[in-house]
Length: 584
Image (cartoon, rainbow, N blue to C red):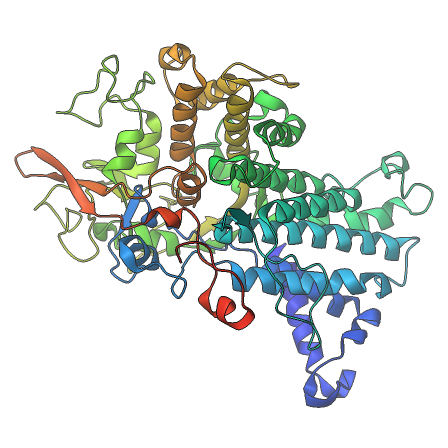
């Protein structure tokens, strides 16, 4: 899919500069009206939305939290967490890219009815037009979500979002548009998502019978023409199913404690929106058995089908597959020729329970401080490299104890600072040995189903308690039970069974989200929307040559209370007179 998008964009750029063929206007700039008879040029406006989606690579914003540190002194999230976050220097900024994407999407939405999308095929032009509108509305909603997550803030007792722009701006526009309220922005997201669902199919799949043609196109098109527009060739573009996932993310954000008092969105709506997409996935039975494992076991065979636009069962929406080894180069330990960049903290390691489900500080856990990694939740070994772990294509043993090898604590600049290395997201059949390196297929998800199941559990618990189901067939407890059982927690899960209050279930759900989604860019945003502390020091462990160990702070977290909400870019405030969020 990505290759197709890139090819079209290259074609647009090439032809827009080809004087002999297209006779461009003065200064070699094509006039917007030329899109009316050039569908590829017109689609370039839409594709500008896709190519601006964040997430082409993992950002590892966990380095700005209590989950990880980096051994790179210039890492922007490390600098941010240690006191250099400002409206002039903001690695979390979404303003520039998101509003650029929204401008392109507004352009195509304003002009798409005039475009000759197809010259052949019964009703094909109209179907292409519908698809374009649906994709543009869905993308615009997603970019608004990204803006709200990064730039919402309280100002004088009002929760403000960003300016709502639904028409393209030009040289005659008034750029001094004030910020809308958060509530107005979230309702705009819902409006766009509702419109997107009206235009898009649930999935892009080929049909084989005229009876499968949706009612709005019945009798107006052929099977072949329908498949040309809405068939499997278009997988990984925006669909109604993906729209439902975006609505879930938006509702969870809005219902969270940080936004209380600034919106009408409730936990019940958040739970209902999550259930709308989960029910299409089979409810509890839709939880992928290998959804917590990356590039191992049955997941490896699934990757072979991804070039056709197919998804592993765990993935709702993802970026394209590419052959690479950059993640491994960045994060393998030094003895595997890596740079060991992302170092999980002791804080995160301690968040993994024992295999019996009990937290390590619970008297029933059986945790042994003298052998801290024994009998732990299997996810610890899947996601984190601990002292004595095996890693890499040859199963090399990694020693992180002080004075052992270059993998040891602070041995060289690319060694771990915490006593741990990251394992999750890495393909261990990759070698980055300069004498014998190779690449393997990798992909980055936009939305995983596990994220959505955890969103439902969180919202359902807040709305109806641990065992309430609303109008659905499963409770927060049942979702968490299924996820923990998949992870390898001993069944029956007596710790989960002992939880009876909303408050205790909330703590467990927050922790499960921390574990399941670690290193995928959620922790920073979750702490802020939960209004939980950002200042917990990042800790590590020093394992001495004699085997004794000491846990101590590695890096302080210098955040102020107002930083639960991020800043607007100072340049935008100065240029357009926007009201900055409190404290910035």
